[in-house]
Image (cartoon, rainbow, N blue to C red; front, side, top):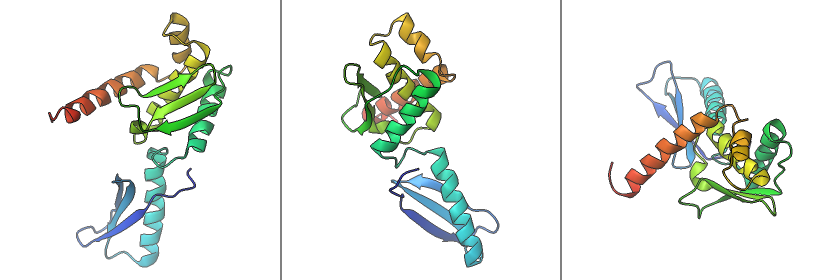
Length: 173
């Protein structure tokens, strides 16, 4: 999805015989493959697993342009009257997941949401899109957010994430 491809580290494992795995670690994708696999088989495994890992967290390396495109797609699907002028990642939001300026149509999304599942980020984007129509958390606003089918799940996910972040920030683990 992004023009900037994440770095991929391939590790060979003498212990693995048939299976391979891939995961995000420190902003890169790590792929662990059986050392005995042929070069062609390893290349195919790496390609397949990198694609799957990126699909699970598509916004981890996404640009502001891609984030804007995703927000516009969600607006078309759920709140057509809400068209953002821009959507961008920001690193200075530590107490909220996103914000918007209804007057200008600008939406800002916290960098802390990059690793969340796509459906969670989509829910935050729909929330901010709804604010372009209704600035307060009124019944009208809640009805707009409720058009996103997983809105309640998003709230639960983010509540858990916030609790986890608070525990780590406060030194309690």
